[in-house]
Every structure is written in structure tokens, then in C-alpha cells.
Image (cartoon, one colour):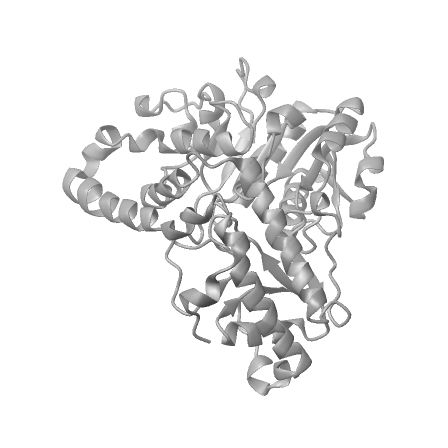
Length: 416
């Protein structure tokens, strides 16, 4: 389906204070993209920075770039940029490794700090890889690390004096439901438990206040709403109280760049001061260059305005679905109140996978989550109200006319 400029005009877009930021991104021709909660779009800044890092820094300055271009400190400088977006003070966020590896680090740190307790409390519908990491740590540590799962709605009241760690994702990856971090943190402190919060579906899409919420640890990825590219390095946060005078290492992955003096090449490990001790191996500079450039787009962005647009887009999507008579056939499984959800909506339909494929065939990119949910992600930096109207009209045509029943939309690839 070809989309022209006239298709993408809407009165609400003309009043959008973030409208100019859309020009920062490469938007594929004839495409409307509502999958930024899985993989953000490529920005022109990222293209330019990666090319510069390849050609000028690695190409011309080669190994001197570790000092000349400050490659060695990129995990920390980028960490502070992310920290600004998630309500963290400087020096308490680092960009490195993957979300899963970082979760292993902070889980280990939390269990060490809360020695004498073993229970990791989480939700049945948490993102699976988070639960897998706890299961892996249990296999390693035995009864020193146990996992207890409860329904999401029962998490708050399930925190007890037996809980070592509350592991929660702020925004549910399927439903988009937003958990109350203030209440969770308060209850955890009252019961002597620590908190680990996954911000994969929060960072870059909505205001986050880790310090104000008194969160102990946080993790998250940069390839969704932060638009840093597929498989881009993740981040982790550690509260100030846990980075004071640590003689004993907080996490078990003793990497040489987490050492206090890495270029002395000592046989014995000694942790670096502060957040640097959570770095393990050599930083992936090309990938970090992409993260760094992607974050520059947020300079000057008011996160309250970002959130207001996110809510506006999702509410407008629901309005258009109601107007098109779609909500009876594919009801929303997301909270009806905008303040109780993140920057996405999800809809239930027996043929959600095929409907998603039919949308993609029309140039409208959404995604499917098992077992039967169509998920729509709203990225306020580049999505528009006009796109919402166009996309829902196409969805209505697909559903009402049963286009999704065509054989070509039933075939599943390795990534769904």
C-alpha cells in the first residue's frame, strides 16, 4: 500500500511538539511502523556515527582510538545518558553486555547483599528470559536461589519476610500493563527485600524515576524505544547505597575491564570502584557508537511531552478501533486506563498471527505475541496520528473481509 504525504496529515500532528523528530529517522518507503517496542527504527545519526567510527576512528586512528576517542569509557558515558532518561544519578548506570547477562549480574549481587534469603519473587507473565536467568542461577546455586511465581495482580501482596528479591518488569511485554513501582519498592523495603526492575518496555517511551522510587537495581535494552539497533548493548543500574565502599565484588563475572587496574594485568581480581565493576569484557565499540548516537536524539526532549504523545496515540488507536467496530471481534487485553499501561496495546484474536501478517503485507508493521495477541507499539519520536488512522482502517478491512484467512498469512517463520 503506497502512503503519500497527504495520507499522513492529521490536525493532532500539526500540534505535536515532537513532530520534527520524525525527520531524524529513516522510515522505509510505503511503511507504517508500529513495532518500535520490538526494534526501533534506524536514525540518520546512527548511520553517520557508525560510519565515522568505522572509517575515521577504527580505520584511520586504529588502536589509538581507545584513548583519542575515549572508547575505553564509552560504557560509562553512554550509561550516564541512559541514566538521565531513567531517573538515575550520574555514575550509577552502565551500558554493556545483554539484558540477560546484566540480569545475572544484578541477581547475583542482590542475593549476596541479602544473604540469608533465597526467594526471588516474580510474576507468571514476566518476560521468559528473566525467569530463565533465575532458573539458571538456581541450577548453579541450588537452594540459595529459588524462584516463586505469582499472578501479576498478586505480586504486591506476595512480598514477604522470606523474599530476597522482587524481580518485575515495569511494563508487561504482552499486555502493556504498567506495574506500580512506588508501591512495590515500598513494600519490598518494609519486608527487607531488594528490587530488580526490567525497563525493556519503559526506557525511552515514558518517564522513569529509579532514584525517586528507591529501586535497588534495574536492567533494560537499548534496541526498542532507544533505537540503538538489533542486539545493541543493554544497560544496568545500581542504586547509590550499593556502590559505597565495596571491597568485595558485587557480581561474579570478574572481567578484566571491571578490575580496579586492568592494565596492571594482576593475577588476582580487585573490583573497580563504583559502577565500572559491572563491566566484564572489552566494550563492543561499533555497537556502542550506535547507542551513543541514538541517545543524542533525546537531547532536549521533554519526557512528559513524550508520555503525553504516547498516551494520545494509544487512546486514538482505541477510538479508531471502536469507530471501525473492531473491539467486539478483537478485544483489548491492555488496561483501559492509560496511566496503567506503557506505550503499547494488545488485542486478542484467534487468528492474531495471520492478521499481523496481513497487516505487514499492507506495509503496516505490528507484531504478534503467543498465543493469540496482536501487539501495537507506539514510538512517540516518530509515530503520528495520521498513521494510526491509516493503520486501523487497514486493520478493519483485513478483519471484516477475512483477508487474514489467505494461505500466505498462515506460514510461520523462525521469528514471529
